[in-house]
Length: 143
Image (cartoon, rainbow, N blue to C red; front, side):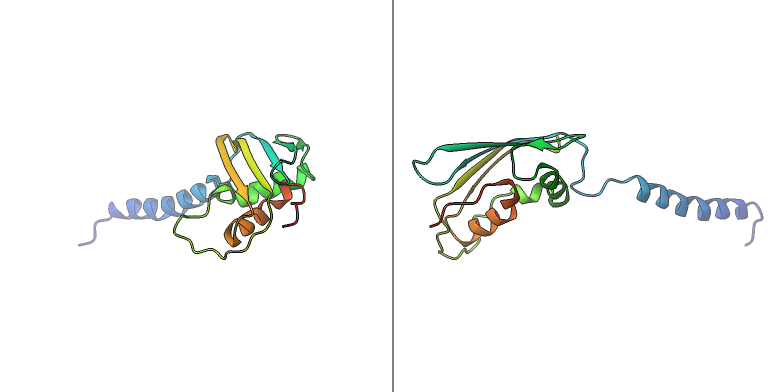
């Protein structure tokens, strides 16, 4: 049964839903994109018994630090997000290839959240993980 007073409600609903969807899409923040501070300390060792080298990175209005390219590093980290620091899952099968004795410990804040990650080159998975953050690190020692 047609009721004329329904028409304004239907028109309002049909207009409001697309407007709300556009508003939400324009204001939502992409996954991994946060405005929080990034301030990292990277403790790097080329191998057992070698001296520790400390690098820093701070991503604020201006990128600063002692990593090879602070501006590029901040840009890459924002793009990669927190996943780049996740450890390899324990049930992952990794090739038994030794990539060298280098190690790195990354601590500090990443996009406003505490971060603690360890990197080495003990097997194929660890080497691949190292390569994803190589832009933060000096060149590793040869195996």
